[in-house]
Image (cartoon, rainbow, N blue to C red; front, side, top):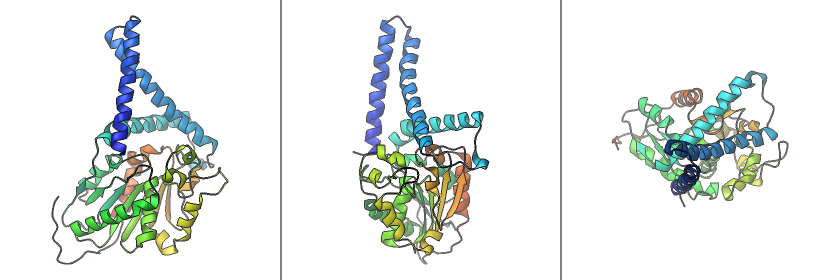
Amino acid sequence: MSSRLLLRLVLLVQALIACAIGAAAAWLGAGPWQAAAIGVGSVMLVRLAINANNFVMSRRVASPTPPEHQLGVAGALRMFGEEFGASMLVSSWHMPRARPHTRIHPDCATPPVLLLHGYGCNSGYWAHLAPRLDAAGISHATLDLEPLTGDIDGFADAIEEGAARLRQQTGALQVIVVGHSMGGLAARAWLRRYGSAQAARVITLGTPHHGTCLAAFGIGINATQMRRAGIDGPACAWLGELAAHEDAATRSCITSIYTHHDNIVAPQSSGHLEGARNLAMGGVGHVALGRNPRVLAAVMDEIMNVQTACWAPHVSHAIH
């Protein structure tokens, strides 16, 4: 089952529950608008509680937050509101409607960008970054990494096919890969299988490079591959093998952007990848990394700063 279909089914179930609660409220004497508000509000409160519980669980195994990234009460409330809003918008609107897409902008000096989503998501996650790439005239494509609970190594072939299509359509010899969460690990698995020569840059967002304790609550092979045994415990064997196959040159082409307030990747220091360019942020949740203006600006800066002139001669640039 695709994440798109799964999310649509979840939304249908939520709508039916809201209708049932609203009908019960109406039977008890509530007016039509009151009943509707009670039904919808009840479902939203459950979603809010789930989001809050993620923060609670992540703080139990959190790494120390540097002083410059510590938040007061107001900052914490703003962050929670942003994360809840981002989660609602992405899972209830963007991802249920999304399809993988490709945008080719002729004669762009920046290598094309391949966007990889995280665990349980799809290409709709990039609804806020894609318009920025279009505005900058940067060619890009999104992928849906399936099966939903599949082996992360198994995504490498699909990534290679997507990268090859982008290179053929743009005439570029290299691509930039941006991966959120599990997508960053999938990008590293692709580098391990196919080498780093064709990667102008790999940018990861909120990726559990050393595993996350919360992956224990996930299902599927990919969740198992992201597990970590406690805040001071080791990452799983798969992550160790992935790291063992990377040399200094591979790590040097990776930028890891992570947040010290990640509510899914915990300990949050798991986002720091030795030998890579690491950009730590604060006051941003896991899902909000794909929507937060500061984070998106940092991603765009990394993309625009890629210095390469790797273009194949005599290749036509078509708009699709």
